[in-house]
Length: 395
Image (tube, rainbow, N blue to C red):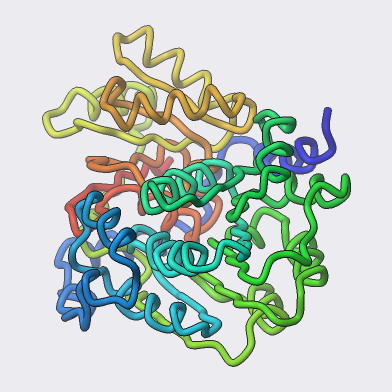
């Protein structure tokens, strides 16, 4: 087993070893309070936000504008509207935003422009999960179409030989997860000194799953003169420790107005004594409106067991977790995105960064370990100002 893979698996193995979730009183209380607020949603400042720009207004090339338009983007989201100009101006930036606010485009658009104008530029983007790295790479491919920009996706569970070749072929963008990036550095395939632009995306999640020392290691190898972009939903003490070493005189853009999106209706389902939990889940899934459902379980074993049970009941489902090969995870995600399966089961490996359109419901079949995990899970629905529903089982 390769070192990078054992490190990443160890993080999730430790998480999964906790066994079935017990109803932590503080977590249940926080979820209940959040659910009560969602019954009568308030209009947030972000919803009333009036953008100062259109994408056509930004100081970027016509070729990039054409690619942005081809994706159907005309009006920037708040994080895009506020972050793109200072990044284009070469300012370090701290972006604080809820998931699903369009922050990927907020840093990709100005960075694609930067590399398009100067092909000697190299950009490193570090993410906590493979899925998020793949998603960013897909977005980069769309924005950079026809611009002569090369990239390398550097993640575990995929061909290391191919990744080495992409780097050696002169990738302008390297997008990767900490474990595999560290392997490339140790094998002298990747030199951190070449990167004059670095993005830490979902930094709080990287800290949560034990990558803080790897991030500090990367920062210690970076050139002193660089553009540093930092994106996170929260800034805890450990995250602040990274910030102090990473950015200089940054512009701070915050569009996070609350923990959960306004468009998510949150409810709790109490498990009925004497009735099997799976029966209550079955009763939900056959109701009208449960069109595209993401179900979270706590352990890999539990997710596989639940998937098998639902298949025997006639549901078409897929499951992703840390024991699945990357190719399997991507295939199942694509099937879910394309509505070939309508129910996706996942551990918390999928709770961050996934941008899947039109998820009607998120179901917490097992309680999340913390309220932050709850927020990240239910953020998979109610995206892009659409309505969504979150259901949490409480035993």
